[in-house]
Length: 275
Length: 295
Image (cartoon, rainbow over all chains, first blue to last red):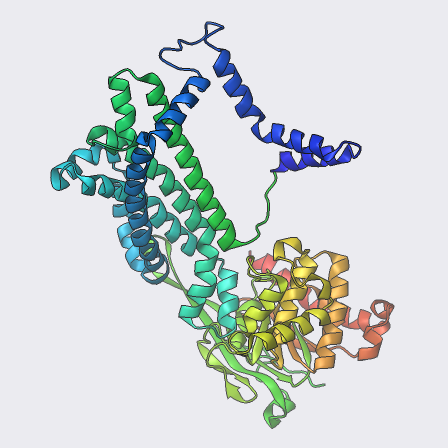
């Protein structure tokens, strides 16, 4: 943001330039790298850099994207995948958030006691747990949602506990000096102060949710984006495979952006850090 | 003004021990009284072995009349902040008692307002929101809260900054918000824990003058803690010098400068100012020598 502000000020310093030019420069500053990358990609086969059969050029992927969107294949798979993410991720937030509040704020002794265990359990590579989940829950929806839930709960839980634990002692002291009760202080000062940390956890979880989603869909599924990608690869439909890859990336970005917007709405204005 | 001394500890042989002031014995109209206050912290040793008892305060006796600006002066670690916490009701004394208007302090309450060195502003709230926050338990009506908060922010000169967040304010302005918050509570007692230690020298002088004026106009009883001799002389009606380990009042020094004189630019060059300043410096130096000798 610092850099963009600097460029912004330089642009506005050029005063004589019209608004269209300034907007254009701003657009180039924000998306220039992406445009340059796509252009290079588009012309890479002509330069002999990549094999277009294995890595199709952006225009081909885009055409396929439009085609699969129009005939509903893509939308169906996106809907199936997003349902799984929403269930696993949503459940994780619903469970880990209150649990984090309780462990961080109320049962500190318990938190200290179970923290090593939680750290250990959370360190288990979730992909190694796939067979366990499948053995226990079969290869239906439940095991997929469960594995996403399992992975998503840890960042939310740990970051919530940390956020509450790191509440500014001076603010706690101030609230106490006002004669504020324990519950009010927890709600008005500690929870609110923990929000940035909580949102960090939620954003991490969202990323993990997509990791696990694709993993789960590649291991045992008959629908969803992960399945679509693997299927396309198996039948050597490279553009279709790349549509899947790009769609997953775009969905991840969209979810992250949505969470960021929610955070901004909840947290209000924030101090911008420049280094 | 009479001079009084803190009661000495168990093995104390100080000749001044138990020489309580006559005012104190007579009762008088005291806003804040501390009688033989002691505070001992138990600190667990390394690897959980043994418990070390640290005496932060011992036999601290002090009486502050209504409307007085009382400064406690002492080196860092002498227990002055501990004492303020006890008066605020944030911690419990292990011996003796503290009385506000003759009633023992049982816990925190809005009959005392505190100002902290680190401002203690909620970073997610505006200046106005921070002052309103303190009024939430006192005033149910939102609009009245807003009116009161606005009034006090204007009083401390921040009328233009109601909507600013703490990170958009300078250190001095942040402390003004904190002072407005303390005033808005409407308590008779202001407890200030080195409030100006973190702001630059020029801002500090302006804040000191404003505080002096506001506290006087509102008739507040102020208990102000500092390690700065100059700040003590400039603000105080009386200065209690504290000595460390364990913390107790070593001597109470009255400041014979009138309210009007303090507001004059040349007060710091005046004879009484220099005399009190020197006396405080002597008292502080004795302890510094002691601390250095004891390692």
